[in-house]
Length: 463
Image 1: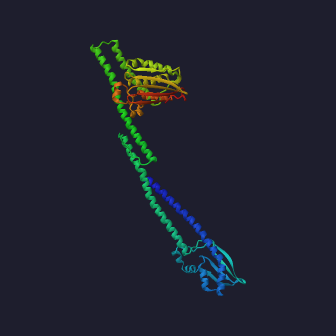
Image 2: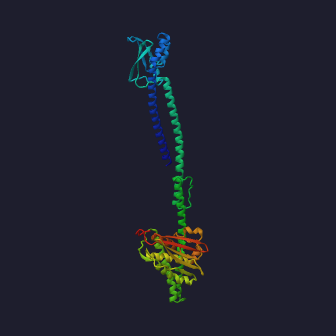
Image 3: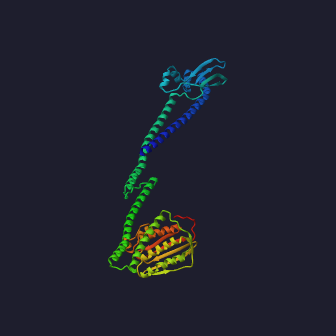
């Protein structure tokens, strides 16, 4: 890529230089030709006065004076001076042109062009005190293409300067092209190697961010992606360990009871079978939560929207968990409002409130307190579930709604849970176009705030 980028820059520079040189040459030739044409016209307009002054100052046609006048004539200009009767008196031509005309090779050596395609003719009257005493018939090039050595030297100096400037610009352009192409491609090459290493499983890759342009933004995005992949890999490993623990605990319990039944150590009575049933229910809830979370994150969880009495739904969920909460010695305050209708999926909303309340129950010890409140705000319902439990560390707050994330792993294991409940609650809230946020302070408790619209704005069946 660096080679292609360098060659592209170089081609652009060469094309720009070529167009610039051609443009300057065209403009210069046109303006210089116009300048020469105006100079010729000015010289010819002054010629009658100069010839008259030369004649009367010497009393005759003086050869030295005429030589000076001829020397100032533009190349290619021929002047024939005649009497008014038509008799030719003398002919004027630039002495340098006359010398070069006798040796045509000198024109080639000096780079001059002696070919004249078109001519102009002009008749000038030479006047004195007594009127016109001579006539000058002038023949000169129609286009100022014949240059004298001084003009040619000036043109050569201009072109030399132009080509020197072009060569210098080309050298600088080559250096800058190489530097820019290297500066642009080096971070990309480093990024490519880092991507390859990430693809091979090295998730600790980070590339330096040296600029704020698109390349720097790409490097920043890559670093964020690598960090997120690393975090997801860590969560995956943690989740594997947690699931193994969560599956092993009830299965071990069930196996122990069955072996005890077989050995006759324990009777297969109602109480022991109820314990086995609870473990089976635990496995069932775990499997259901995993399935629903996976479906919700794929955007395939389809709610069945109906008019739901939200206060009655929360009341049912509170009553469902009240025996567990009271058995643990926790007080529960539920400020039940009047009936409030909301558009939503009754089953999913029940799962949502069950997970939030059960989460508060798990992490609150006796004599703790759980409080549930609901209030209407315009066309939205705000439900707040507060507890006086162990709280959540500040560094864990941004991640608690991520799947498989659990704050304080050892304490979480003691209370159960796999970090799925809150992630599923968040997905259900999003499915109902709501928001679920949390405020918490370690050892002082947590407060979950759920804001749900009373009416779903769009009849969407996916997250």
